[in-house]
Amino acid sequence: MPKVDVYDIERKKVGEIDLDEAVFAAEVKPHLLHEVVRAQLAGRRAGTHYAKERAAVRGSTRKLYRQKGTGRARHGARRAPIARGGGRTKAPVPRDYSFRPPRQVRRAALRSALSLFRQEGRLFVLDRFELAEAKTRRVAEVLERFEVDRGVICDAAANAALRRAARNLARTVFLPPEGLNVYDLLKADRLLVTRDGVSALAATLRPATRTGKPRPASSKARPAGEGG
Image (cartoon, rainbow, N blue to C red):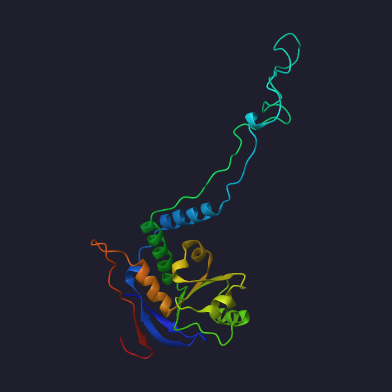
């Protein structure tokens, strides 16, 4: 079972926590990460592109002049794609690009992303992320201590002050456990998650057993200095 240190917002070690092996030590599957990111980006496309085909262009369908005997190139109607101002061939039409991978695929991809962060030492667990005042510069100071350039903050508690203070950060986002996603994780270089966030992620992402019930929780915290 993987074990990581727990810090306070001053980056002082205050304990350790055993992470759920099924969630934070899963096999990293790049093809699942690719599929889920592709689905997220496809869902953001507006799909409003449109151009007129031959049938949509205003004008007569009459042939400009006879086929033979004029010495000129053959032409049909003015709406033909070859004519200036005519319709486009195979013109784009509005469409919905979105597709939704199965839930198990989405959860497996998120487990892969979390496991990748833990393996590379980019996952930091905080005891709590409480601010004396809801100021963006206070959050920026914490991020500087953890050497975060582009990050994700995850907290399961109803932390309105943190949510309000982090929304003005240009390169860091605050996400609750239910909003954590593969795309934002892979864009980030650090993940700061509170102890409550770890428990919520483990409960949500733990693979189901054959009976359909989630596996029992295995995330346990211990105070600093306590022996294994």
